Length: 200
Image 1 (cartoon, helix red, strand yellow):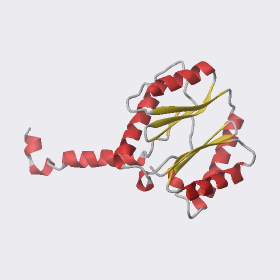
Image 2 (image 1 turned 90 degrees about the vertical axis):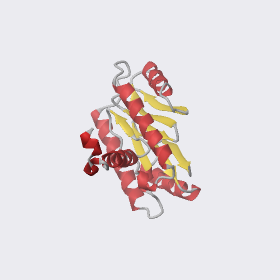
Image 3 (image 1 turned 120 degrees about the vertical axis):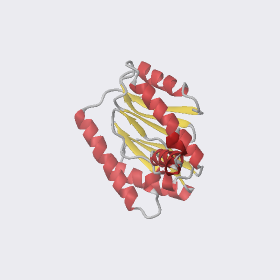
Image 4 (image 1 turned 60 degrees about the horizontal axis):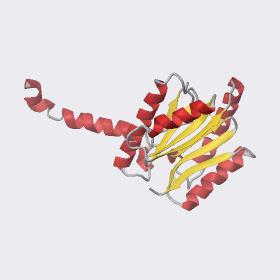
């Protein structure tokens, strides 16, 4: 009580709240990897969403991640959880249809989730495949960063078993078209899943 009444400590609640907000913002729209590796995520500094929505999305993604990690059945070693405006995108690879279904059920059970886009692939992966996917993701990310009209920090790239998934929020249809063109050019004939949203 004495500590709180000391004028030197009156700023503490404000400082702690500010730090929490900054941390959540830089968690972006919640590109949270459960086990496996997504290549980067989003930066709230250039996001099209409101601060409140970004905070909500970050909380949802963290909650989904925690629940999946604690579930022994799912074995979520290659699942990426992205959240945009309350919509959860499950991206990655699981071993069975049952695991795929259970992952979606867990996400739907989290408060604040508006919809779940279950894009999980059923199958197996390998060290060599993971390496190839990582290399391709890196190449795509490099080209997006080099493009002057694309805010690449708003775009998340995931590659799983040669399937490239593009998730994020862009400011215009023109920016979306340019981003997808770059992804397609680098990816060649690989399948591309488009999760890009224009505006908020």
